[in-house]
Length: 461
Image 1 (tube, one colour):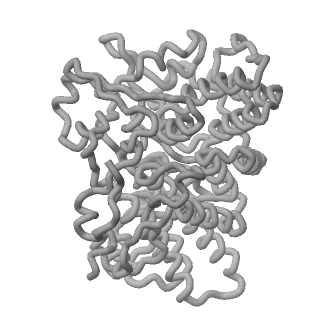
Image 2 (image 1 turned 180 degrees about the vertical axis):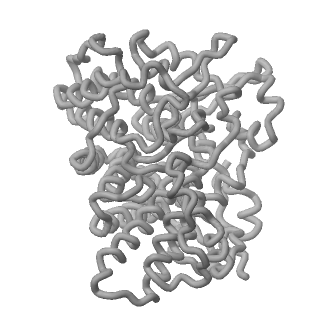
Image 3 (image 1 turned 90 degrees about the vertical axis):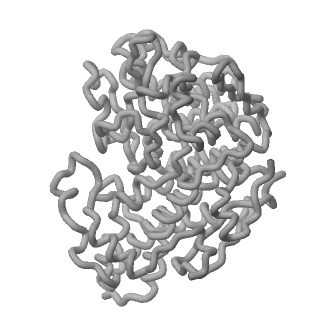
């Protein structure tokens, strides 16, 4: 086997035996769905049902995002005592050490959703199907393209520079576009990375259905919502606005947080109607709410009648707060959620309107969201006298609304390109560690195990 496939030592045949042993799972509330097998004895994928079964493997597709999606950001801190008990990789990444790496953060998304989506795309070209199955086949192809693009985007947030005109020719990520484990690995450019992500997503919008039985399966709205997220990260606000609009035309539902009080455990239910596409990163225990304490400035920014403060957070005995309001909706209430949700799209619309100096439109989108988050009768619509003030209001609410959604790191990278000049800080043992704007450490090192196997170009330090 060529070692160049990023140390993914899984044969195609073994892949299908593995999938046959996996529960066709989504999450705990869907007991019957969870307890059935996708196909009882898949050895060779030979039907469209086999392909759908591969994409329906929640454990391989919907919970394999990079572990550091939230861990690198400034929404939380840990104490020196907790820091001293963490494994070495957690310690170095927490303080953005110049030599920090994290093997699973690279390996997991490539060996999970990227690999399996490529298996499906390759096999779809080989299997026969009836003319009546054309729509079904297109749905499967669209889903595989979406999953690959969604995962590529998250990998890019860690291992290449953000999209900007001055960076387009810099090294991008490894774009695995087939399931052949002998294909050598090579880095693309930043432009090629984002071109591939966008082209896969746009093609998926023509193939995906309007609705899906389960939110772990992508739809047109999911693809449009992901395009909005991608374009926002690229600071292409016209396209971000356009695609957010396309997604919201299909689902604009917002939960009234008054219906979540008194707060239950978990506070937000599984598969709630705001969710357009369900996904979460791999669990990272540094974010356990017994370990990760919410940034004190962030906590203080919530009004006393803002229900997000009690839905998202729980008070600790030492006066700090832990996160509990995950949109994952299971007992793992600390877990980040990185799927596509309507509230994110409202904020995208509000930000894009502010940046285009459409203040009234910006406040309309923001106020529509916020009135569902505050105690009934207590919210007073925000107003603004300038586009700068409107933008600042939106960005402040974006952070408060989308806490532990795996988006803060991406937001920080793009906002610093806009001149925000945000420096991250950690304090351990009385020593301050900082990550200033434009530092090379905003792009992670490719793990040394991967470099040794593939001779990929390493990111600078």
